[in-house]
Structures are given as structure tokens and as C-alpha cells.
Length: 55
Image (cartoon, rainbow, N blue to C red; front, side, top):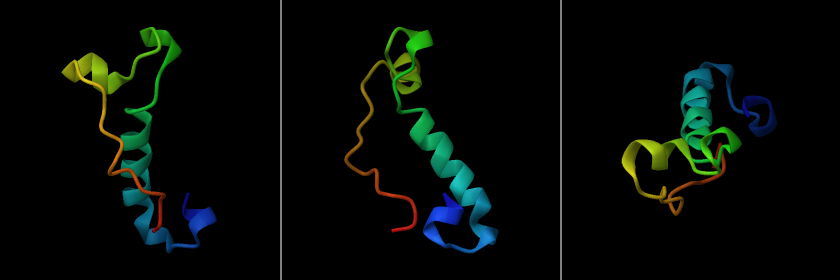
């Protein structure tokens, strides 16, 4: 993500946090095609605040 966005390397921590945030809101076959967010909280995640990395 850092390479594609041409952002400085000191933002690697923010890139990692963003990747985990997105991964927790993506369906997983292992969980029966539901998201980890749904497993933990019982509701579908709100993706309206999800923006492309680096914008």
C-alpha cells in the first residue's frame, strides 16, 4: 500500500492498521462467509467510512 500510494515509509504502522481494519471487514470462507466483525459483534460492518489508502 505504501509503494502504490508513494507515501513515506514512516507511515508503515498506519498502513498495517489500515490493512488489519480492512481484513476484519472482509468475508472469510473459514467463518462461513461472514466477517470477523460479524462474529465478534453480531452485526454487519459499516463500510461507508472506508476510503482508499492514502487519500
